[in-house]
Image (tube, rainbow, N blue to C red; front, side, top):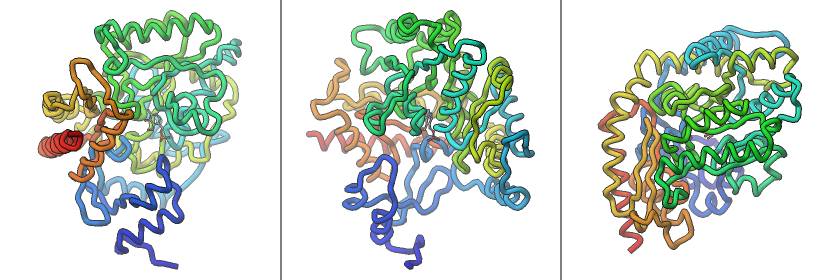
Length: 456
Ligand code: PLP
């Protein structure tokens, strides 16, 4: 057996990885021909790879490292909790202190009467819970036919069969028999790509009203819930026009439809408030949480549920739960993460200090010849690449070709920036300093220049 460690040469680790490790969203050719990038350590906003490169993580891992890498307080809490109570479940009328304390803290942080938490191990699991919870809610209330859930094309809600069905990623629907029945998708509020001649405000209203049209076509007595991310993350950091969310709220109120905010990315400070639905101004009945809940230090997710839904669901036994629902180590680590976010004023800093600094630097990229629009909310941002800004035109090459070139230039410049088609996106750790923000944007601009040169 080889002694596998950080000290092995990169090529050997890559060969072993390609031989035995199946990766999400990766082909075998990518693993065998180029090899996976191997990350060995991380601190703050900086990753170190197996060749010793220091890379600025503009994506906070997968949008989750809100407090940054290397916080030993979380390691200490995990070790302490593992010694005291490494595991117990929360099924069958049982509980433990970490789950009690985390649920209480989340109820305190969440707005309005979102006072109850159902724990899961991930965002996907939490959204599967939400499908069953929304449908069960109407069933208990005597309306079992009210079971359709409406979501959006190009939304992302996870990778399990249920959450992948809620999501509107056509590439995911093409594999494995998705979507499950009674999920209905409407169009996204992406003005840049789909707004045509309408103003952003007109377009925001028009796209919101597609929800009302869908409800009227399907019948309000058939529709259980509408689920959406306050700002689509994996879809390309699509920030809806200001008219969108108030109209969605009105429509759900008028038709008695549950509103579910998928806060897996937007939650825990990403948009400058604790939750993205607060920044974008709407009131969900259920919120999906994960990622920033523990800043990725432990796998944990959940649903924060309003009084009315929780009381109806709890009126009967909810035949649902995961072995790791409210896992004590994950819960204790999440609680410590929330303490750090709060006591270090990280959410306020995003709203008032580093967020505005990133905004000014990011929006300055709009003068680059390849950049159509530069959009930002809090600490998530995107730029649309285009050959013709005024026409908001796509490239002649297949969508994603130029975005991929730009992503590769970013890697070469030691910056992790992702591409979604020809949109470049960032979501750095919330603790990024102003100096690191300047470095991030400088590297992004250099990568754009190199992409531009490569297209000539
Ligand atoms: N919801 C949103 C908005 C997400 O961005 C993600 C993951 O990226 C998920 C749900 C799924 O979370 P997980 O990967 O923890 O299952």
